[in-house]
Image (tube, rainbow, N blue to C red; front, side, top):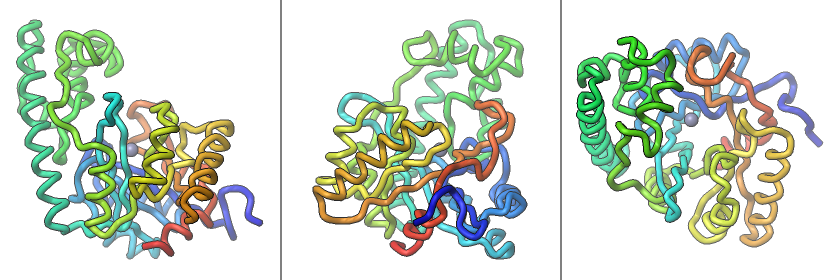
Length: 289
Ligand SMILES: [Zn+2]
């Protein structure tokens, strides 16, 4: 029986972001950091884009790491809760996947334009070009706008920008128009050849829904070992996975990762490869693809 995150000293990290979405390192540099951290199985899971995958794969190969093409899709469930669905083993060039991503991308641009309008109405002088400087990839999201507000001295930190202006129900917040549902995301990932895993469930309190997605809607796994899951959360989601396995008579994947963006983004001292994911669980994922 395996205990702990390593087997023969081997480590995996299945959740990280590059500059193609809201991470701080280009895909190549990110993969070099993975190699330096001694990782053996890695996946790049940028938000709503596959653009970094080829570049990351190339460098991962040079460093003899097993690379899993990934993505993290933004969805919203019926209660209005934002739920991220990870896709592993997807074909990055899948036509339907790319078209759907582009459709949602265009909506995000429209939303950002509206938020910038609101900022201007609140005497915060920002424009789209400034936001673009931070959004090096295709994802325009609130942290990018928040950084511009910090840059221009309107607020001291990204957190303050959210607390005063950009957080839900704050004056410059604009809700997304139409989100994918978790079920739609699962189907999209499947038709692109991948398996679907619900990301960091500790943030949603939707255990009953997750059970339903696992037993009725084709969800393949739970990110049990996310870096923000303490021991208690790990046990809670392991139990949920086992319960779903019994109900559906099939294995439920248990994945995990650091959700790394950059050492200085968001969480204090974020480190690549920081996860309790047992290596054999990453191997099980690889076997499924
Ligand atoms: Zn993430």
